[in-house]
Length: 343
Image (tube, rainbow, N blue to C red; front, side, top):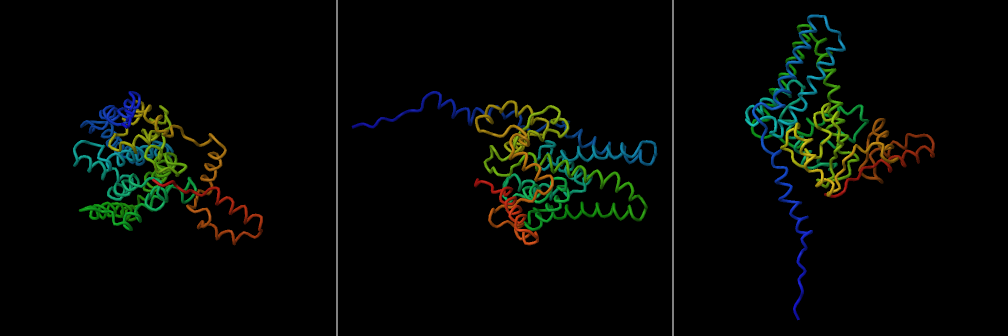
């Protein structure tokens, strides 16, 4: 007796085709290296130009301090996108210029380009993995408004995991020496006021901005490991300008070589694919009571356990005087625990 083999119908073949070769062809135009003079180059030069303008006007003493701080913030905010694209080799087609832009942006931000690059690539490899994703710690180990200081964990992670390659440890030393030299010179030659007002202060504000829009919002509720769902999109023309495309963060995770200024068109082309995969395409803060509760919790407390029964914050219950409030504390820990799914 012959067995009947059911051949796939035309619809199934079309679906398979569109999920692989079809979409690769559609996205290919955005995967090519950017042009020699591309928007990221102008961000890099513009960031330095605005920064020097703020310093010059400080000495002129004409423009008010809030305006100067705003200019310094804008300068550093622009360089944040430069260092991010440079670490993915998407800032410039020439690898040496790409490196120079990355290091230049890092120096202005007070970062280290090798640290940023290696740690960020670890994030891409282990999204929402509590043990191996450094940005997961940044997002889930304290209140959102204190997210900026937690970026220092990146430096610890870099050395703990020995992530450097070739000359990157030397590069780290040079960039950290430049930072220390500027601060020492500021003390000796009495320009620490400029450093505090036009560098450290704006850098702290940029750290909060980067932490919220690069780390916290794109990956909450920090549960998905699947590549189609481990980040989100929340389409908006205004946000696309203000945060330079990071509201299309999932597009970046799926195709990291796409430069920031092509996230939006790449999203519009691949939206049917993301719909098919069930990718989150909204901010997801106040859509349900659970979303609202978790967002408010993150604003004020934000520390999340990865085990419901053995939270690291559970011992704090012993400091609470009444049994009723101890139970409420443990209940809160249980309901805010983050247990990411297996990849």
